[in-house]
Length: 389
Image 1 (tube, rainbow, N blue to C red):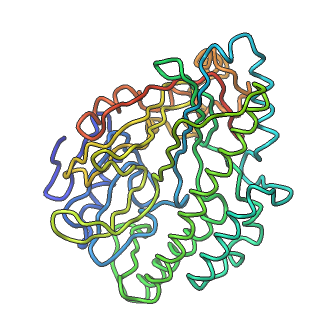
Image 2 (image 1 turned 180 degrees about the vertical axis):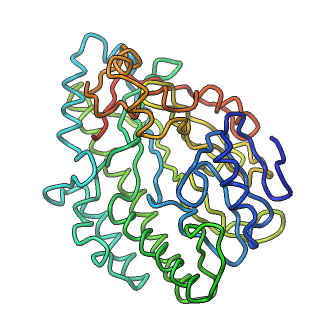
């Protein structure tokens, strides 16, 4: 860990100047308390750095939570081992999963399936309790539950160091969460103009605790976080079902972990109750299980938090980009993507060039930087990868 200023600590050994400048700008906001923590995967983001832990006193910056509210990971350890998949046509399993779960931005379910019904009822009840109608943000939000999205979101079948099979996926609150986030970022920006607040970046506009705007944001934020959690549960249930059908044997879940990495919670740190916004970071309290994915084609990790107080009990959420999507497309080729994915069943298309492992920081270095934040329980390597365009 390196102390970059009185209010900025960094665990990142690989970081560029633009990202550092952005983190310094956020750390200088007057309500940061006690300090901003930069995770090893930190990279440039909208307003605030992706891979940062931002504790605030009496205010929240909506853009510092991120536009994919509640984005995170879920993993299930099964009773199966590598040998159960050897000699089988893994392309068939990939295609089964692709049929069961809508992929890519703008893709939704055609109908509400039976497994989604109780989850939707739970979300309807929560929205009513919080006094808002999610249909104002997305009329088809119910059909979004159980959908993956695109970008770095994925579904994978992986093998750990003991040859045990894990099911692993990454997704968030989809279009409805994005609309909620965008709305409240806009509200914060309008209030800043109304009150002549001079901001170093418009995306650092904030909502003040105790105001109606803050209260509404927290209520809708928590709904979106829960939507994201249930979205992952719904998709994982479908993946479990497809694997069961593929192998002709029911999955016996040995362990299930579901964790956010774009979210806000009220927590006590250094004796003070603060709002902690983790934008690309997971909670890593002592003993808490967590998930840190690598990039497409590299290892992912099941971890356990070490409760480092200086990190505000946090750890990285993944590899972190080194190349922007447009830069990756200009730098890498389809042949390089194929080479990186050797031995992994995936949909072979140049749509995924911007997700090539070389566009990300080396996950091994990220994990080395995070050695004081988490311990590694299991190392996972994919045999099947599913992504949306």
